[in-house]
Image (cartoon, rainbow, N blue to C red; front, side):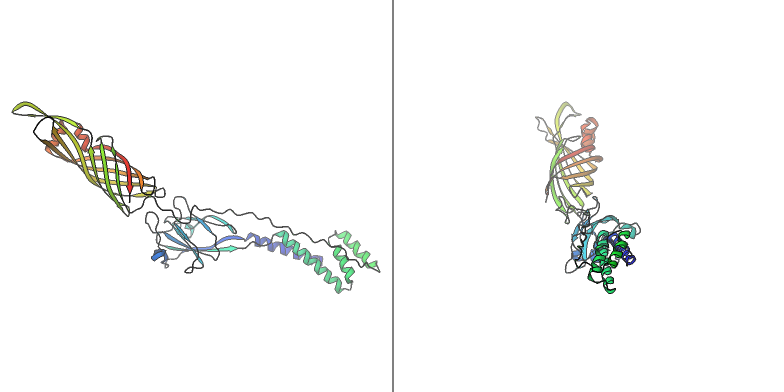
Length: 406
């Protein structure tokens, strides 16, 4: 019976060890559901802050309370728990380009940075595509100590039953139970004494029940995502804006812009009122008299660009190209000869940088370079004698100011 007892103990220990090793979270499989159009249909089609369609991961599990996390550069867009329409699946919308996913649960533990791309030929997840992730959760089993305690109890019960079958009676069974925990030498001696005793004591020895130790379980570390739902973007791919500012370098002046973004495509009209001036002296071939004119510039034009939202829609960079019409107007000082005008056309290349302070207000900075494309004859004469006119229609400049969006 002792041999049977130890064999049972060994089997229970092995079983408990295998079961404990298997507990936690297991990804059974992950694959691209090419025929599933959930990610591109109706209300289940979700876009990120740049209005680019997301990829959808259907996490198949009956459990709740999971948290999910991807990289900081490509954060999770939306999570939807099980509903009546999908009672066995959690919907997780992620941005295209995601390759890894962390999964956490307070009870079952955490899978860190699970490599999704390994099942897709090292390719990242794509927009408007649906993927299936089958997740298995395994309950924790009794520890080795608990299994050993249970085996000891069953071994003692089996010993008592065998003694009763052999006619040893209640006293013999009790005595055998009392001595079951002693070393082998004392056990043999006790059994010999019991056999010689004609009148065994009727009192039952006290058998102390082994105290079952509570298993020590470590609390699994869970991934805490910042939010399961995206916050309201500070700047949007489609919006209207007005901005005012100053231009401090080659053409000193005040600027005003009116523009719109239509799915990140930017159209902007602008006007600059020059604050600087240049005094020009005009003469006549038939007279030695000279006339003094003071010229001031003004610029209006159009720019086209494409906005790129960054830093969770707080920062936007918009490369721009445009065309600008430069007009200089001269007025005679103290004379009655009227005004003089000259024109020039310029092409511009620059980048508008917007930084949002709040949802509808922010700052902007626009470095830009202008190249003169054409000039009127009067403008050519003015530029030949006065270098400032050349700076007004070409060269590097910067605008900065305040932006309000709607």
